[in-house]
Amino acid sequence: MKIHILTIFPEYFESPLKVGLLGKAIEKELIKVNILNLRDYTLDKHRVIDDEPFGGGEGMVFKPEPIYRAILDVKSKNPDTCVVYLSPKGKLFNQKLAEELAKKESLLFICGRYEGIDQRIVDYFIDEEISIGDYVVFGGEVASLVILETLARLVPGVVGTKDSVEKESFTCGLLKHSCYTRPRNFLGYKVPEVLTSGDHKRIDSFRKKESIELTVKRRPELLKEANLNEEEKKYLREVLEKQRFYLFLLHYPVYNKNRDVIASATANFDLHDLARLARTYDLAGVYIIQPLEDQRELILNLKHYWTKGKGAIYNPLRKEAIELIEVFTSFEEAVSAVEAKEGKSPILISTDASPKRKYISCEMVRELLWEKPVVLVLGTAWGLCEEVLDRCDYFVEPIWGRLDPYNHLSVRSAGAIFVEKILGIYSFCKKSL
Image (cartoon, rainbow, N blue to C red; front, side, top):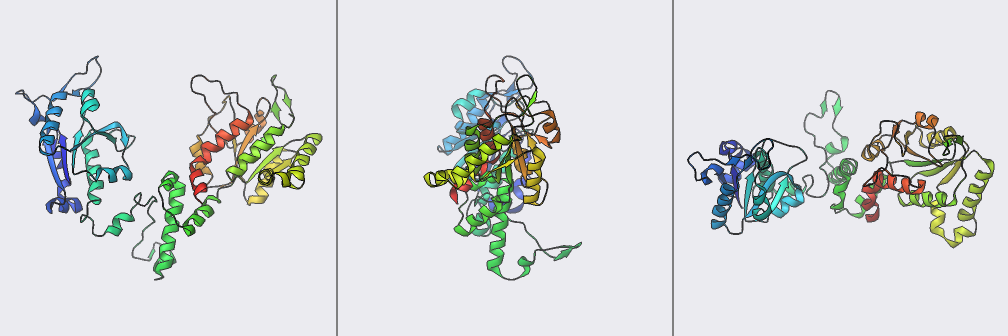
């Protein structure tokens, strides 16, 4: 593999290319690295490589001519060279992209600085625009080293064993398990017993389970690429079942359009749709808070029909969903029921289409699910009363539209959107089990 790096600071690479496995790989010519000075491709006596941006603004922009000459020079020797511009606006670098780049025989990394390079080079002479993360560094040199080291690990002979590379984080679709070494007891903190047992089958199982748990909690999107066997899929299900998520649908206390506190009527569609939502995402329950006796009787009759009556025979799938519905006379009664069921108090998260309080993101709600049971409190009529909002621990970010602030959704629609935003990242896991 040949890697060319175009930079205005060739000295930046003097030390990194001489140390560690990368240095040894270059010494053995497993990888050939060619550092190119952009100023060598200028034609004026001052070796100017940048100029002020058209239209004004701060900073300087790399001129197109020197970069173009450098690309032509590299391609004259290696016509199939893949030209990569390292830029914050580029495609996010990851292991999959690294594996694709590693198949190239020749790569040219263009290291930008200041305000970047002339866009015409990007539009017409660049094959890939790549970013190493959602942050900004001084220039592309550090990014080129990140990619260079990642690619070097994929070149046969650079790393001691193929197994070492294949078991790294991201390569197999999972984060790597924790590692320990001597002493066994450090300041009272002990190494897990299984790792000192000598039972390699148990050790492999322990490490794989830890990798699965780390990945599903920290980077669940990586599981899309993971190749899990049946035993591992079973463990993944066990990990996901630790998340305990409830929906509360409050009919009291809520507001009407005049801001009067009322108890609203139960809507048949709400019960069916929220129950099916809960069953689809494996929620722990749908708790209906309804103080009106005749309305509670209506709910219980509906539940009996679909779980024990003719409806259960007619549509067994609906039966599975409706079984998740429970009915309570008050908000506090429902909270107490969750506490009794889970053995700990739940985190109460409120929704509010017109935000009056500081709110958290759905991603933060997802993190809270690993700590304690979570209740997402949904209101009927014209929204939850202040006393309910005051009782909640957090407030989730409202659902925003694309072009204006209109967000007058049905509770069924809002509930579905919230649950998908919070748990949807795990959906592929469920389907693969």
